[in-house]
Length: 212
Image (cartoon, rainbow, N blue to C red; front, top):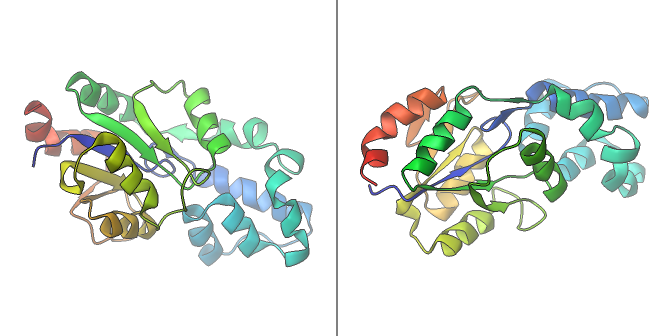
């Protein structure tokens, strides 16, 4: 294939936020006197939007407060973002793609503010365009965000790869017809390629990268 672009999920791909997200949701549950998340709740919450996750965790009478919990109950930027880590090798890989003219985008179930926090705190380069969040398109696994990226780039689904780590990402890629790369998945996924580091993905894509 002639590789024209890569679309990245954010959490679990660009950044390791598993412990941070667990802390965020458990602190909110603790604030309301509720028990910490079970493993099955963790799996769902790590793939969903924050609003979807909190709706699943909290009683309905608290749902009107959800939009403000990341500020008023637990200050996400101050208490949670310091726990987030960027995956080793990601920035090096991004620079290689940029040097060879390969486009990059982000498709995430984070909100606009949550994604901007990641871009700001890690001083990520301005290579990701567009950045599609759950504030701009229907959340994954709906393919709307992926299809909007293809339109923005004026390319076909077979010209790009979508890199994700979850079944939700896999469903999104399949719905949009985009080949799917599973990055360090917690469970086996039906992916076109599975890798466990950015160095491994760079090595496996080297022929397509050098072709640009």
